Image (cartoon, rainbow over all chains, first blue to last red; front, top):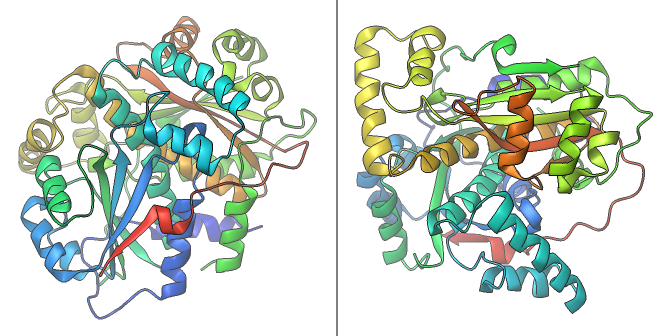
Length: 220
Length: 220
């Protein structure tokens, strides 16, 4: 159990860190825990439709720079820089990726796979209309990957590590850079979001949010 | 600063809790912190395109039951049950919601709004192709709301509170229930995801995840 005070402190500590101290490196055990929080994150149907690429290679970071306007300072200075990939294909009921999860990871017996497939097909087709386009299914995989993203940032803050989520990139161009580097095949994976991790060099601006009254509605 | 051990424990404690103890209620201060973690969550451009509806009304929970196959046990037993709404319209550059955020919440001066609008328009149109369809923009708002969802579940686990994320609902039908109850206008908001919170009645199954080797790739 963790105290309310410590948790709240972490949420106020976290901010979109614009530049990191290039001289400071996150310890292996701290960054290992940040990755573990992502790995243990929940996902719809337990399909974990994500991959985490930790980009430490300076040349690759440089190639991302021209297509990542939102991380001009973070890309060169981050202790660790992450690309979160989301699954683009193989997510249909009989899809290669889903079948891999059911058989090899979740290790469902055939009768449970059959039952799950029925539920999942209804979910995809009827409940969420995810078969309307390839993009709809990819966006759904992206949603899941944001759970992992959130947990990485929150755990970082709890360890006193700063982070910056990065959506400021040209998706196709950035995917091309990653594909050309042999990191992903665009048919199978897309780039959902990126994030830098490290230590701040300056104090953040005051945190601004809508009031609780505007965000939360109680129906009693 | 929170210890690595306490953080890791929370990630192992959290599981998709299938049924809650109907006799146990989360304290106001614990649930208040869960909501505060959602409110302080980051979002793209700081637009917080979400709303949190805490559904404590038994009649409303009952009306959701027939369209929420994924929470048959959770809906009646949860101490607190949440619907996370994502913004459906008003997210374009000149959109009502975005303009409200820029003027009233972020309180940008006119010249900064002009600058931001230019960046945002390029992001929507060119970087992420979010103007291709209304659905693309809604799905992008949903992604952001999953950051708030993740933080709620993680903070809950840190407080010893169980949770269950719920995507098992018929989106249109569930939105109709919420709209008919006067909670949201479907033109403006959609139902992104739901979640129940409470206390477990039985031990969870062992946690299964892909191995770190399959999930994480280091590029050094």
